Image 1 (cartoon, one colour):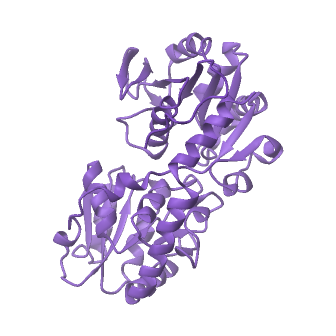
Image 2 (image 1 turned 60 degrees about the horizontal axis):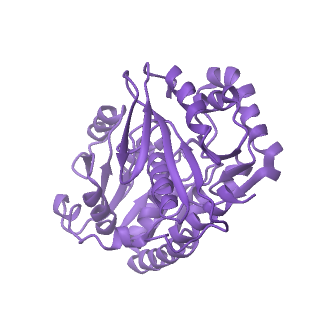
Image 3 (image 1 turned 30 degrees about the vertical axis):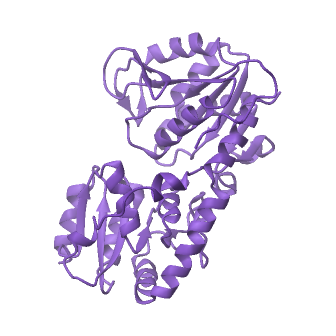
Length: 384
């Protein structure tokens, strides 16, 4: 989708600095989003985008061009509490922000908060609030004063849903600065991929309903709850795409419950195969248990492919993406019985799956259309 027909109100070149922990080829929802923003904003006339991130592992600073975007990866001493440690990043932020009309910071990323405060940058600051820090309580004790300085300094705080605001422990006093811009998706990127039976060919039983999950195998994703639910699910097989710290533990769970014949671990799927998996599944499940799961872009990817979604009732943006009773079911988090019941209802009722799937595709194309999202984001970044 080309955005070159969007024009800036003035003829002045607008320079935007996108700031995040990591960038493509790092795999992650926010990293994919920052890549989308950077590339699509740069397609707009008179707009130039640079990216500043950190190296994930120990190493020196280097720069590269990826799909026309200048990406600087600051040297790092490693990652602690899920946050890179880098003095180079603070120095580079000060240098690169001097030339920026707007700095767009993606949080949570404590190092970026510190870099902004120390930089003396006087231009426009836009914060995209993707989630609260939920688990690292000790970190929050020290980080909270810094975070509050960032939010006070921000000209605008972008959230993807109203749930990000109402479910946050920190955004209420800054509500007047908040604006909702949902994450966007380009349907053509998914529907143009040639269909393939990437799940069907792995089924143990010919007529099984194919239930799909993709994501990192970490604590807040709730894959353990999904596996427990499958002890009560009938005529279905579960396909799990992704890797992570809990992978071996989850595999052992399937053996413990004697369901290893209907639970398939696919590992990391390349982009094309992942899109084929969305199109080949019958039901998509996002069983996350904590509001660290703030949106769930994977829901959108399944929805645009016309699949019903089962998600969880978190105090975040998750239940605002796929709507209970319209595009799928929303169940209580950490509740295997409710999750199993929802899967069984959809598995037994093909017409309901089709109805929810049609509604899901329509919602994804209408509410989360990439073209409208980028246009709104550009307006916020460039308006006086």
